[in-house]
Length: 416
Ligand code: NIG
Ligand code: FE
Image (cartoon, rainbow, N blue to C red; front, side, top):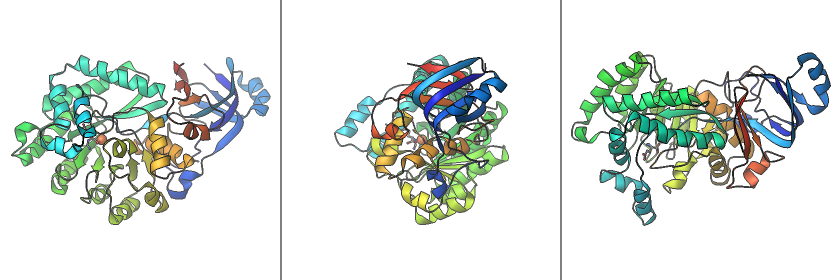
């Protein structure tokens, strides 16, 4: 159905002008149309000023005209890094952290990721889908229209496949656009604790071929960090992944600098994520390879770590994306508005840079920026209507949900 919005107070388009992503200083140059109008069916057909709509009504004959009464419209958020398919709950570990235990201490005792692995292995696929649906619906209600979801809480062939199938089911059940990633290299399963290289062989010889055969993922990711996967182990996994036609994303330098960002660059990873402890050399390499730096300030906040050097990365010309990292251990939020708030206050990004990072650059990190991530003619009609008159209010008035409506491919999928 052809719909025309009129009287949009602020239409934030994040105009990319044919570029796949915006890098460095380009990130701050978002385009906004005041007193705007927008015509769409499942795709964006036209955008301009409300004063220009008479001609459009005559030529395009929209079936419905909606007066937005000075609300704001922004592109749907692209949450390009999540782990929302899991079972169980780690609020007891969280409470221990509030009393002083660290994320790494809890992990060393066999808690952390492995607590969720135990629960996820025991859960049925239906339970996994049901739990994730609640989170995904919350994400939509906060303005997310595209989401990447990783496996990585199974760590056995059957449990990883179960998680990936749950992601597929979720994509069938929900209007959300979902991109699956295989993260068998999230941690080492307890049964391989003393023979880690054998688990790496299992990933390479059995898991990746099976995921490829069942077409259950687009990307392969690995947690390359102190106490997790070494550079050598990750190289083996990424070489196998490339042979099977996957592209690479990397959990890089989250807990310590292990030069995982350089590894991501070496493999032309589409995205290097976290980067709390990235080195100057890592930043330089990411710039050369064109790898997107996906920053997850919810994690630094939730596990009380220093924030990634976003300013330095943008000032050095990198393309930065923002995502939630939604997971039960290190960042339990599906709310991209919270992430925007953390990015501008704690990582010194501007409102404009943060919006670009949470939309177009997130889409670019999923190789989807030709179809979504900005409001431009020909792209999918994915956007949120916000109960504010200017996009600055999204940052200024913090801690509440500003979303009034969410539209995906021209269909209203949520309203309050
Ligand atoms: O992205 N870094 C590794 N994985 C997650 C944490 C997962 C968990 O604690 O369950 C992350 O922070
Ligand atoms: Fe993560």
